[in-house]
Every structure is written in C-alpha cells, then in structure tokens.
Length: 326
Ligand code: SF4
Ligand code: SF4
Image (cartoon, rainbow, N blue to C red; front, top):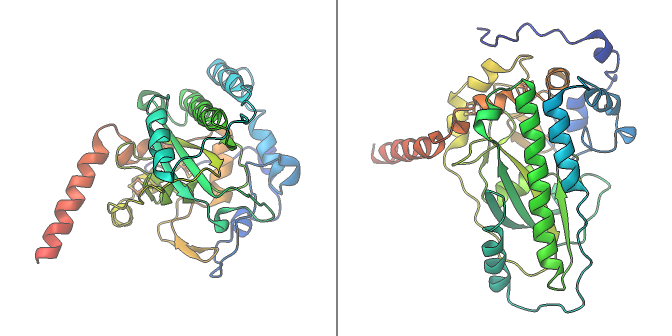
C-alpha cells in the first residue's frame, strides 16, 4: 500500500539524462557474497566518480533558497577553521588517561555522542590507506523540529548545519590533541574521506544499522550526523552496543512505506561479503537530489522521535526477558 504523499515520484528528465549506465548498486557490491573494500560512490571528488555528474547536479538545485544558502555559509566558516600544527612538547600518558581526558574535553564541546574504536582496514575505501590506529567518533543530533520537515528545505538546511557542527567538534578535538604534541586529523561530512564512518560508529557503540541504512542510536534514533578524528595516541575503545534494532526493523515498515521512490529494501541483502539492510542507490538518489537531500527515512523512524528511543529499548528488553522465561 502506498503511504507516501510524494508517490508516484517521477524524476526530472534533465536529471535522468545524467544517470550513468553502471548501477550504483553494482558499485556498492550488492549481491556480492565475498568481502571487498567499498568503492567511492557519491561523496568524493565528483570528477573521479561514475555518478559524479549527479552529485554536481544536486548542488545546482534551488540556488536561491535562503535556508540552504544560510546553512552552507555557516558550515563554510567551520570548514575554514585551521587546525594548529602539532606542538613540539609531546604528552606521554597511558591509554586510560588519554581516553578519560578526551571524554571530559568532549563533554565540554557542542556535540552529543562520543566514542573510540581501533581502525580496521576493512573500513577503508579501495585504494585508500591510513596510518593512524584509532578513530574518535563524534555524533551531532539534528533539531527534530527542523528535520521533521523532510523532504523540505528546512530539513535539508538542518542536515547542513549539523555537518558543520560535526566538523567544528572534530577540529576542536584534533586541536586539543595537537596542542598536546600528538598528531590528529579531523574529518567532517558530507564529503567522504578515506573510510566509511557508519561501521566504526557502530563498533564504538553509537548504535545498530537500521533498515533505512542509517544507524539507530538508543537516544537520538537516526536523527544525527557523524564526524571523526584519526589519531595515534594510545586509547581505550568504547563498547559496542546492541539493543534489538535488527529484530525491531524486521517487523517495522515505517521508513519503507514513507520512502517516495520505494528505495528501502524489505529484506537484508549480501553487500560485499556481509548480509545487511540496504537502500537501493539508483532509486534513492534521484529523489534525494530533487528534494534537498530528502531525509524522510531518518525523520519518520520511530526511534528518531524525541523520547521514544529509550522507551523502545525498555520494551524490547522486557520482551526479551519474557521470551527467555517461556
Ligand atoms: S533518503 Fe532515500 S531512502 Fe531515505 S526516504 Fe529519501 S529517497 Fe528514501
Ligand atoms: S522506520 Fe522502522 S524499519 Fe525503518 S529503520 Fe526505523 S525502526 Fe527500522
């Protein structure tokens, strides 16, 4: 049953003329049972991508939109911040001391989620290399009163604002580490760097992968964005967390029903050696491009509604305890 008021969606001819012959799902490795590293697909330099013309087209849409222009201008200011060089007096302390000092510093910053995980080579895009051993993950929550307007411009502007806030927090943390004589490299979205950010965010305890292809966090649902800092200071990893999202998503259809181009697949698929939830890239991108980055699936997910996530976690825990007793 169609539930989205945006159906049926018919992409503009001028956009469809830019769609390449190669499917984005093929580039993403859908149906592949063997592992390989991810290929850059959309958020790298467009001149190097098969789908690069579509990315360029996205940035030409609604050029006079005031909310989007203001949000991009604010983000530019954060992108322009220079991270200082590494101080010549390196601090030596234990992994426990670095981790607890960092957590305390992060608590003073304009960010909501903090985690640490060891870098795994399998998260790097193909042909990319990194020498750092650790990733400090950052999560910045959307203002739900803005993101709930998805797919309108207010939601698109909110996403841009949060990418800016994530970039600022990453630069603050990298600066803090460099001032202590150790190297650190910040990274904020939406443009991708050398590694996928969702797998390390799951590994460090931000949440579990939802059917809509985004992380579901117990407090913020999917209503947040990611940034990170790469470093070699010794650290202690934060714990991975599971609370039943997988089972919940297998019984929920909200995002799939609300997705205008019906891009959210109902079952898990093989993707480069892993069976997981997957969003059809070829179906999602045209709607995303014509609607300020869409974000409907994030806004409608029940976990994203303020206050709902913790209650769902409690319900799932009660159900699991009941099932154990039976
Ligand atoms: S972002 Fe993509 S997958 Fe999510 S609702 Fe919009 S079109 Fe569907
Ligand atoms: S809307 Fe439902 S199925 Fe979709 S990600 Fe959220 S919980 Fe999972």
